[in-house]
Image (cartoon, rainbow, N blue to C red; front, top):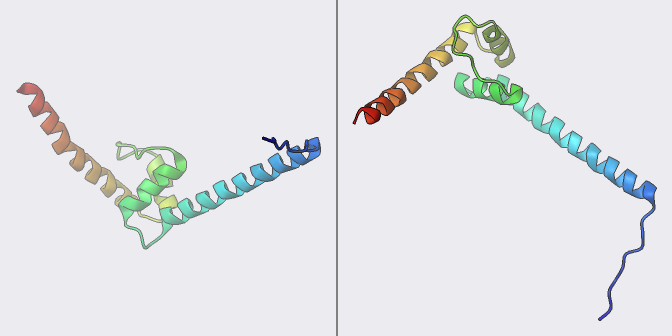
Length: 109
């Protein structure tokens, strides 16, 4: 049984290979960010999808306060009106309300 041993690579080749790999990964991350940014302002997407895309890109959640200053930033970044962003806030509150009521009812049983 013969074992194949690879010839040692020069150190500069390892560094170049690592640098190339890092450059490729950076380019992939940049492309993913471009896609996410396009998704957040695409008029083909409804407001809820755009807001979720904004949240993902910025790693932040939509605040529940209707007067929060970041809502204007979200509206600008998504191409929505401030009212559309606030409407998404209200929709999320309405969606959570039945879930909260169900949990409270389960706790009383």
